[in-house]
Image (tube, rainbow, N blue to C red; front, side, top):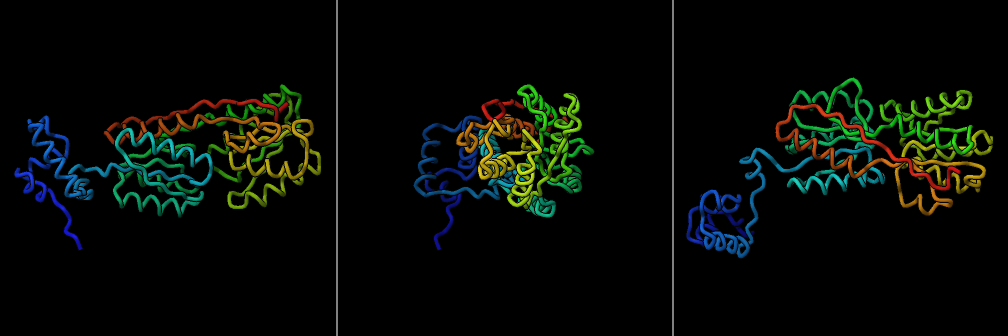
Length: 335
């Protein structure tokens, strides 16, 4: 087995002290007034000897691993996949790498991921907390571990968060339906106590009430781990009964699943059924007619989450609540 190249090996090759090599490798050559010729020789030796720094030792010296953890519901979900990409790119701008994990909306999985990442000494965490994770959030607070909640938050615990104006998002969708002559508007959402889902339901309900449509309020809930089966049953029932003339889907995954059910039914959109989805996705462009949808400012959410976290890592004691504004993209599916 080949011997691991050390700083001492580089120092011996160049003919300088190990301290001087360390200064150069840590970017302190100007501060320590090391000549450019020596710096060049050290970098050449590093390349020639294929020196790989000991990241664990470096982390201990710096008191930082230069990594952050990102825990979302499901990294394969288009919304969270895109969010993860933005977080990864933005973190790199600050010199951080990102370690990803999916909780599958399960508190036990989330607890394991948090413990694993904390044990690996990540500098901070960005979380989309599942139901039942309040104790995990309190643990992070008590341990003084920097973290930011994204997409959803816990209303009884004041923490850093970057979220959408969920209430206004669904309220504006109802308003759009009504403006185009639709009255029997159904909301399809997850069966969840999470605040962002409850706020989307509340926005829909208040929108219906404010437009004199209280009698037509219908909320259908889908189980997270039974999306396909529940969606098919819900949409088949609603379409067969002809009990609605418009449907609003509360998430990206529900929108995609709902579109497949609608296409399978051969219902004409928007003549027989108007549709508004949630979050942009390439599937929406292939659906005919093109789907209207509520757009979350994904890039801004990801970037702000990283910026808030970096501030916390650097010592900020300020608790930040950021609510991003949605955009309603209206196309031909809602009249």
